[in-house]
Image (cartoon, rainbow, N blue to C red; front, side):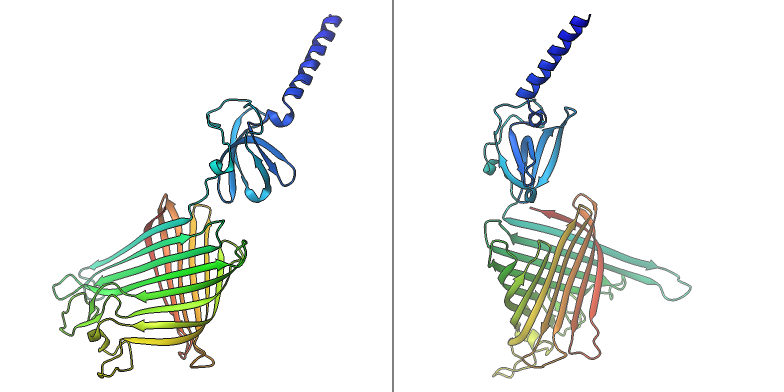
Length: 385
């Protein structure tokens, strides 16, 4: 019995030695590819996908289970594809096609990113025979459209941000023929940022910001969509319009926050319809025919723009914009404008979210300073392409 035990133990020891020689500890837990970490650690695996910031890979754990994991690129020194001659195990997660190069494995985000978001809020009050006052019959609706077309590429120092934000709010005080549908808000604004970075790290950039504002629908006296008072149009698309140009320097310490400082900016303000201009609501100077000017050029001075975009996992997406300008060409202090848009989206389920939308505007030359604030809560649908 003792001799048999010694023989068995010897064979077992040789088997262990042979197994370790052929399959060292690293090979026991992985496939053909090898990820070498910056701390000298190694992961034998099958690289499934790579983005600009992360690797997805499959591996075998000590319990011989096939698992999937990720590692951020900042922790990786190199990736060697087909480092090993053969796979140790076959599994559907590994797939049958080996990755032969980083170009094939890498699946970076598209350089051009298009985003679309639509929000809607509907309100209705209907009250009959109220003991505290007259009957109430009202209807209101607010809708928002947010579009984005951005260009960002790792190898390129050039980037572009294009945004379109439109808010339309309507209301109706009653359900009689004399109660007409009215415009509460019709605000179409765009933002464009053309940027060239000084270095590949893209922290410091030269940029040009262009912001535009106008409305979409033709509006008549009384904020109606038809000329019930026979007093003509008071507002329409590009009547009025404003374009603000701000060249400057942009600092971007991370992918979430951007601050742009422009020592000089100017405004292009005008209308395309003389009838609307002659209402006197938009320009205060006159042309040679004694009509209100259709175009006004104005120097605005310095401008600071702050942007913050961030996603917190899958439940919160924020998009904040704040612009501060100072008109030092006409006044030395207590002047300038503030314009902010703050969008917070709380995810309900896939592509559907509850959106809080706030607008903040103010004129620092007014005394006392009373900024305008407007907020809307909408149920919306959003999608990225």
